[in-house]
Amino acid sequence: MLNPGTQQQIPVTLIPGDGIGPEIVDVVERVFDALGNPFAWDKQQAGLNAFEKSGDLLPETTLSSIRQTGLALKGPLTTPIGGGFRSVNVRLRETFQLYANVRPARTIVPGGRYEKIDLVMVRENLEGLYVGHEHYVPIGDDAHAVAMATGINTRAGSRRIAKFAFDYAVRNNRKKVTIVHKANVLKALTGLFLETAKQVGLNYADQIEFNDRIVDACAMQLVLNPWQFDVLVSTNLFGDILSDQIAGLVGGLGMAPGANIGEGAAIFEAVHGSAPDIAGQGLANPTALLLAAALMAEHKGLHKVARDLRDAIDATVATVDGRTADIGGKVSTSKYGDLLIERIRDKK
Image (cartoon, rainbow, N blue to C red; front, top):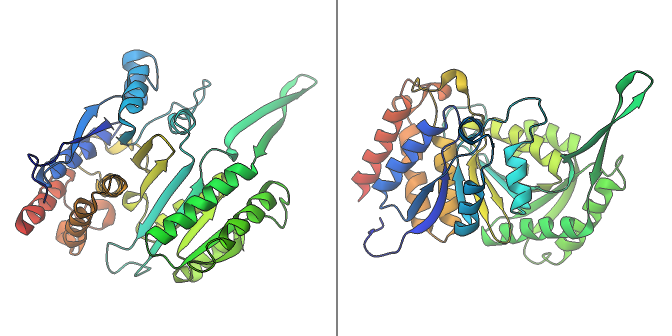
């Protein structure tokens, strides 16, 4: 465990978010205190809570904090539907040029439909169809007669995310990278991505095996035989869809952490929604945000902190007595944190 007196704490922007966000962030803070917290939290607001207080879903004070720390951990955010509101997550990615989205999925709860899953989805975060370059074309009295979306993939962006995926695989002792695309139909948009990623892969041929899969075939194979995959890399929209599918192999989004990484900043998150219908009831599962915090610790070279946290999570959910309702138990959000803290302290 860390001794807080022997190492300067690393500043982190901490965004509790909306709905169940403050509850699961509270667990993260308490658990990291038990780990000898290596982080100095700077709490800031974003999402619906921020909008109600300041009229802005993403206040300048929050952006300024992230610019200073270069590091953020955030709970789930609510973006109001309609009214021209843009996704706060997309705004954060664009503002800080967080080009790489990393979504690991690992079996933690035993006895599920799939055992021994250990996959990583690497998704390009700034290009493709998902960024929402859309408009309507009016015909006659119908202002919305035709809807159009523009997808843009660049060779530079494709090369950057492919290199990130292969470097990640090498750094984490992975064996294979699968390039996921739809180049059989979207020959230009994803053909460029496939061509470029293959060129990058050749530079790693003596270290990492690589292959490619058409996205629909990949989705089917993830259900039939997910163990054939290791690291997958894809464009923005396909990566978004497949990363949720992969989370489903290990129990759902409550077990799925995410990292958004750029040259000058990195934001780690629970990728599930804010679940306002269960907020304040002690039903939320903090695991995704805790695992995101473990990714953040690894990002800063704090591998022992990440390992100790994951070990505590694995041991706690190994039996039904340590599980929250969404994974078949009855433990409250706060009690789950207590159980993790007990295991961490017992290990000291």
